[in-house]
Image (cartoon, rainbow, N blue to C red; front, side, top):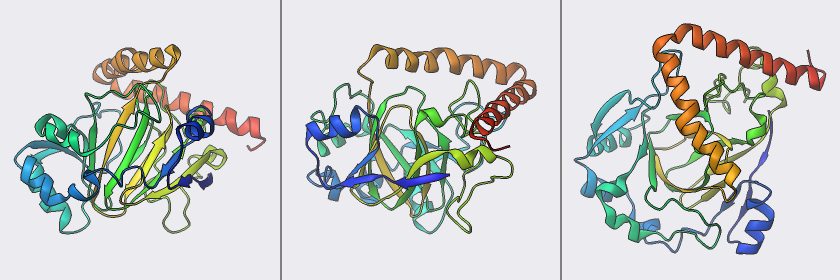
Amino acid sequence: MLLRPVDTVDKISNEDFRKNYYEPMRPLVIKDLSKSWPAYGKWTWDYFKEIVGDKEVGIYNNVKSDAYTPINKADDYTTFGKYVDMIRTGPAGWRIFLFNIFEHAPQLTEDFTWPDHLMKGFVKRYPMLFVGGASSITHMHFDIDLSHIIHTQFVGRKRVLLFPFEEQHKLYRKPYEVLSLADFSNYYKGNGKPDYQSFPALKLAKGFEVTLEHGDTLFMPAGFWHHMEYLDSGFAMSLRALQANMGGKLKGAWNLFGMRNIDTLMKRTAPKWWYDFKKEKVLKAAQKELEYSGIQ
């Protein structure tokens, strides 16, 4: 993989943001955006346990999906309070995915400010909390609705890999899915490389790497691939904004209501055949990338 750091600023004007990051679709970390929010110091494990500790949540392990894995189905269920107690005691490879804590505690929406000065189109009904124990992994994927993401880290550190959507075949994207066939787990440990023997086109993939810390806000442009690993137990909030152009909105709608339904149906009716079919197409697309670059 050919990685470079994500640009980082303390603050940025609306004009600079739109010209240099939003329009050219480049990721950016803004260090100070959240520091004026009450949430910056107020949101802690104990505070969340106090207000939503009794709420049931679905939790997800680190196992990558296979031919039989239903879309977004939780691996287990517990209460938020018990989950927090579990991950605070040490490394625990469990995470909470798309927990709309604001439905249970709407007062939390008063603790941050929507960054409307940076972009329009925020879907304000659906801010989302993402929580993970140290060592938990969000496997390489892009967001199905193709929204722009403002992702703010509150507690703990998280290492993030980012790739533009156009790198999809080098990343071994599975057809009709938003997931990569390759496994990037702990890519930064040891020799710092994924499995190039099984997935040689990964050597060609051009992307970014960043470690998010308390208060860091990551702008993730629409369609960007991302892989996240929790170095510490922590949580972050994502704010989603629809793309301004109609083409982007329509592609996101197709992914949600067309592509996903086809994939779900095929996984239910012919999972092994469907998986093998998609795997063959993935490997052929990656081979074309290798041949185009001159690597056999």
